[in-house]
Image 1 (cartoon, helix red, strand yellow):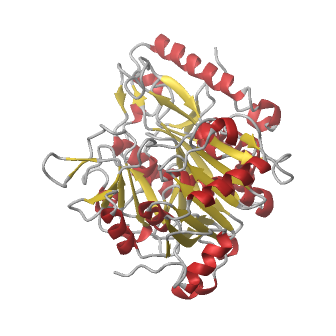
Image 2: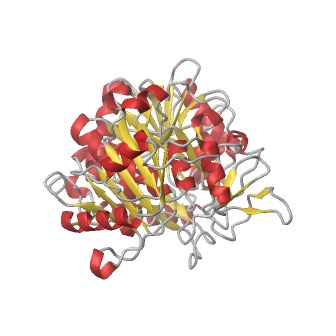
Length: 537
């Protein structure tokens, strides 16, 4: 199959010139997924599973490296970005030099260029040009971003450009990075530089981070790290949650259409997906528990860092020899019940999912506006023994707005947008504990999935709107006294503990963790948010 070069491909030549690529060996512009799969196999960079999916190894990095993400500090960002934490400033002059090094690195190499866009709502549609060293990185961008028509490609002009060169290593002493890998965002130049890491998630999260800044600042749109689905009657639901809380599992509902699994915006018209695909974890994946994801792993999907059963091309989803963060990317069309336009109306219900290993939070509780903003800023879940080296007992983990590494503004600004929309559109917000009951991890038991599904179903159907509630004395949460298809005794967590004094002790312990974490946000938070803090005894 003949591959066109910049010299004999007018569009490729034009794009290369626009990018500042001086001497690439070959230009592959908006190459089809089939050709990218071929190139991956030819280069010895991947294998085909028996499902038809392309399997690749991302190399040294099998996850994002938040400490190596930088933001150019300039007139746009200086007074808007919440500097510190994950937001490390970078000088514009150093960005320029690093960009020129990457462009030079592409000399005499094959370069893969793709034009896509993000934001399913036409009003916020943003074009993205992704330039990659590897064919499978380019295919990932095509899976995850929205795909333009052939007609659109004739005239498309990128608003943002991503340069992704996993084989280019920075020199920290010269390039002012922390180590050899980096991801740097420049809002003035509208460019993202990614080097030294082949982990594909850096591509999608680079753009998500830009939208988390642009949309609330310029458009007053609320960007959300969440999944979303829509019912047959047009009722939209949103699910926030950190890894391990059940976000993907609980939003995948055969009775509801999936709007998206990770990144959305909320406007005055409703909710829209930022992306054109899904990027799901596959560790311990099974057809029984996650049929939608399992069936989406076919030709066109990319599996990352997985293992095969010996002597076969059948994927062993329990194999974590490379990483526990095994992943699959696939276009939304691989989901049978995907919402056609990747859009929905204003949500009637929002679910905050937490896996509480202390076993003290109720399995479902209804939040006031102040409480919703407080728990949104907190972004709580818990790690348990075995999830990371050195963890021998449950540890509370807090990630502001359920996505701290991707937030450039102060969390209180995102929480204010949530509260504003809750009040404007009369949204119910529910805190769902998918973790432990009857005692902490090691003593109690994990909340049964069938009960969690029943509680969410009841909330979606409005069956919890008129039941009686009672208030938890430590966290102030409103707990329903009954719920269809759920034993009433498990709704109040204190009732499930044999040792009530121990429950009170653990509840106070967790409340203190919440309060200590919130101290960093208190000065910027509105009074109703501060007043929602738990009261430890």
